[in-house]
Amino acid sequence: MEGYNATILSGIILGVIARIFMLRSDYRQFPGYPHGHVTHLGLGLIAAALGAVAIPALIEKEYTAVTFLALAAQQFRDIRNMERQSLAELDELALVPRGKDYIEGIARVFESRNYLVMGTALISSGLTFATSWPYGVLAGISGIAISSYLMKGQNIGDIAEVVPSKPYFKGSLLLVDNIAIMNVGLQESRDKIIKEALGVLIKPKDDNARAILNSVGQRQAILQIAATLLGSKMEVGEPDWTPIARKDIDTGKIALYIMPIEPDILPLIKAVKMTPVLESSKVLPLKSAPGRQAAD
Amino acid sequence: MNDESILALVVLEEVRDNVSSGKAPAFYVTTKKEQERVALLVSRIIKAMVHDLENGVYILVKH
Image 1 (cartoon, each protein chain N blue to C red):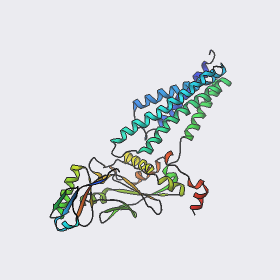
Image 2: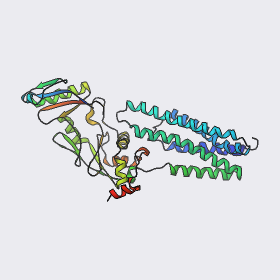
Image 3: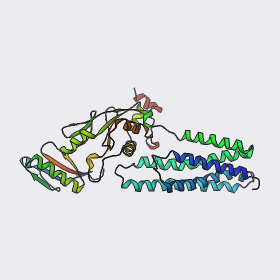
Image 4: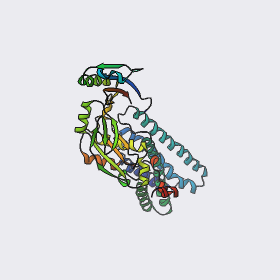
């Protein structure tokens, strides 16, 4: 495998750069974990190396080398399991848990990022081999751009309107708009909620959005992100402050109640809007004939 | 979400007949103020949520 230095090198370097670039966008899913970053950079390096040597291996007629790609796929599936397991265990003690759907989404993202790294390395090394390294680098950079575009996905802000709505009480029932959130027994808690709680309504823009917001896992992800970004007064043994999102069964709009540390409504709306639409919650009934028929 | 059960009752003496306690212990109190206080104390101890049935009966439920 002499004479492939530039090919392999450009593949590996561009692949690792791609991984670093994708780590940047992790602030919500993985807050500042230095060790987590090292793990993912290490695995990204392996993925980049695999992608980079694939073309030289094929040129040299080392077809068995392709089986290594299968090995890599296995390895990356393990990453998904690893992420899922560790997040699920951390979730058990979280006051406002992420929920299984959100965790599955994060785990999938971490798996697929390695494939994107491998793809970037493959394209970059391939073009370096076919032409020269500047073209390879250029291809790698566009690979990074394309993969970051592909990984973007939708946010709640894209599929729904988010408007403020003050929580209030009817007897002991806490309501947001006309949607019952929960029954709060203690007068002291009710007074505090009236004073400090925030509420928003999430109104789906179409039937697809309604189906997405129907998912309890999706709602839990919204709550978790809102509670992370604004803080939550939720405490062990004080369930009165649990953030809750409930559906209006007639219209499918969602009422969200939270007791934030920072009682500012605009950041809350922003936090709700920036929540990603989870892959596992994503359903598109409007793409089917019965779904469209029912949606009149 | 699993096995939510009523862990305790805090009941005003005057509406004693609104409830009959089975598994969960019932605390009888005489004033609304005392009811609030007892409900708060017990709920914090057993980490349960206080719900008001609006008939003088408070139930403490573990969610």
